[in-house]
Length: 289
Length: 278
Image (tube, rainbow over all chains, first blue to last red; front, side):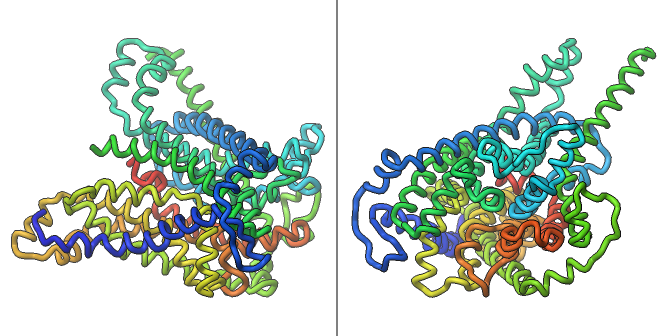
């Protein structure tokens, strides 16, 4: 478009300015804070300590390491389960349906409703004395579980809630991917006498791969940030069995007010998320160019 | 077609229907549980084994407004979500138009930079934003939340609206520009009306994100500017005592989101994947 040189600035400038002020400046600020020892409760002054906070988190703090392990376990478990179940549900619903809008809306309710409410619902279901899940277990003659109070079960329980919350999102994306597949290769394979398994393995799967990658990356990124569900269900406990990094960082920053240490830990999380987000961005970019 | 083939088909259809039913029961049972708990009296809600037949009441919905200033929490949530949506749509549509229509050096880089910002982990942004808000004495104000929500709503709006604008053929605006229309008039009179459905969808998404947001609301607000999700966690601390009230509050938080999801369902995938999948 041929036009004045100022117009782009007028259109884009305000947004860039707002983002610089609200995101970029704060993020540099907290990078600075991460090199200091600063406790908001003990009074105002901060002290430059270089990389000590990072060194402490990575090499000295056993809780950070535990939290890191819990996070990796959590992320791997939820993303894998959501991907496979989501794919199953997408394949199930991939047929001409009447009133597809109702299916879609009903299906995706868990992923668009308030995450805190998701937590509340699962607290009701998991309640050891009155919860519906233990009631169902008793119907089958099984022993009741202390879903959120038993350190060996709690992480599993939170994972189930996360899988319930996000599998529909996965299924919806993959279903959209399936429905956008070109029909010719599919029909050709069927005409050539390929079995349903072969059709999936050699035709559907390769064609669906871009959608799978996008869904996987988005969930991977978001599951690293899980906070609301942990806060409502377990507050990281019992012990540290469900203490994911974002919750541990939150506790350091807003319970102990060790702002310096919390910033350093948050930057470790940022680096991990940035790596995934850049893969995602490059992927989109390749598609656009 | 042979009889056995047809019978096989019928069996498969039956299996399909049963499995689909199971999937939807698994998806919908938990929220329905919440709803049923919300229309039980507290006595019924705390019965074990759970009672499935009971006399429904609506009193819980009335009573939560007396137990806590739930009305003002609803108002806070609503005001913050609306203002932050308006800001995201206003600035976002301008930026989206600029990025989609002007060719300048590094315009692609700028677009993807804005997309990357959307992915910042909230807990990382929350620490400096908390200190900044504290310095400016903005803690526990609606303004603090509106500003904090711009950090994720604005990049989202820019990115999604950019893809809506890219779908409009350039020629429509170009003919107007040839006729002597300024780029601002072309944006205002031609592009904006054409992306009206996209604007509505984007606005619904930013509203949902703001309404559901918890971490910023938790750390930036106290009593005055508290939003619904934070207020809900107050019930959790007293689990077992006020189940049916907690459930009623939860239903009030959840219901508008279900409605909005239904409204935006044609653009759900696009919005949830930031336009990566149409």
